[in-house]
Length: 575
Ligand SMILES: [Zn+2]
Image (cartoon, rainbow, N blue to C red):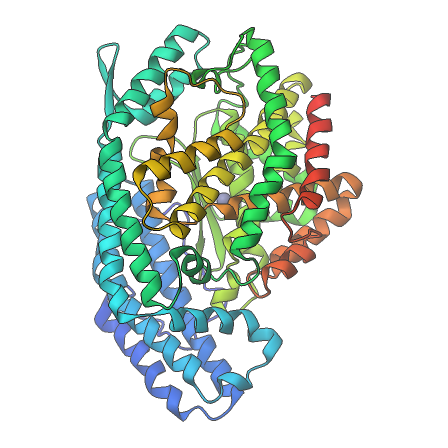
């Protein structure tokens, strides 16, 4: 039984190294391929041979990656199929742990190879920099500490996952409670918000305890690798060669000076429209005019055909790309029983085609998601002819430019879904969401900068540092009589616990997307051309060059942000 929505997809390039007949879920069959690469390396006598070796390694990586993706897609499309789950878990538990140390061994062989420095500098600059970094940061004594870190992260997830409340006689998860914050009935919103906030506060001490241990562990990991603090280590570990922690601090400052006035203005308008004296934390998600949610489509087929029309307006090539995804059945978008929640874009790395998974139910959020994921898919399609596996993917700071730009560019044609007034309402919500994201991003990032550069701080000092950030970036929301909830509101941000320092990327990318959008306002054809050219570079160039190719500056200072916020503001006034 074929559990995948798409049929047999041929490899984009015929295999040269990986045998045609091989079970890529069976380690004993995979292992000899790593052995071959390891044994061949010492015989390599020229840069050309080393390149050939890299391409064979790339082919193996792509084949393994596709195997893992296929199993993941099958499982998420059929959560009720025990075989699909078993096949995926088998790969994760029995194949991946075997692959990891062998990949690392190849990386070590590669960077120490006599021909390493003879490869063409410009072509291999990024790849070599990243592989070298990975090898240099490795410390055997950190392996156990990282396992410990993962266990603590799991404890946090278990703690948060178990949180439920009893609401009107029914047990509900905190995620399920989110929708009551959109209810026009204010008393009901307050009741729901309070219940959730109180439930979270019950676990505050446990969260703090887990976090204290995480800080200690992470500081030890950083010191072992020769870094003064975990912040500097994390930046290096994430291969952030093109911006520094100081640049991030400046980014926070520019958000405070350039974006906070717009945030306050949006909050003020909301307060006026809701006819309130003060905005309370339960007044932030409801439609300020108490309108019913937008209904862009009923059937998923309508969503796809209208999205296709948007791309037809936008660009011939992108339109053909989206059409191809439909023809090859690379979309599984409807919400149905037996499907995992959420949405994602995945790439079948050997066929070099993208796949989009969603659970569309007829909300404006679904339209945003399909545009976003299509942006990621276009990125994958743009890099098809790149043979170095690592270069078919870009850093997150730029991947999200591809997707977030497509939300903004696609939104120009929302009339495919709505009458003008409703299209404008959707655009307004979207733009306000973009503006509102920056301060929270800055809070999450700045807080972690403070934490890991003030090791040995007390919980009271940590609380004070967080409250200072809430004052800077929280805007005009009245938390009186809920001060403790405000002081611990970071406990719900899983990135802080599980993916330290992973968040600023979205702020950086959003600046890129806003610039692509601003460019398209001046010259649509050029902006789209630049966008497509930059996507085709994949991960082959450093971030400033990827941004430059897209027609954007890789800067997060006030001078870059100011005109973007001005454009968003003037646009908002028209909507
Ligand atoms: Zn994305």
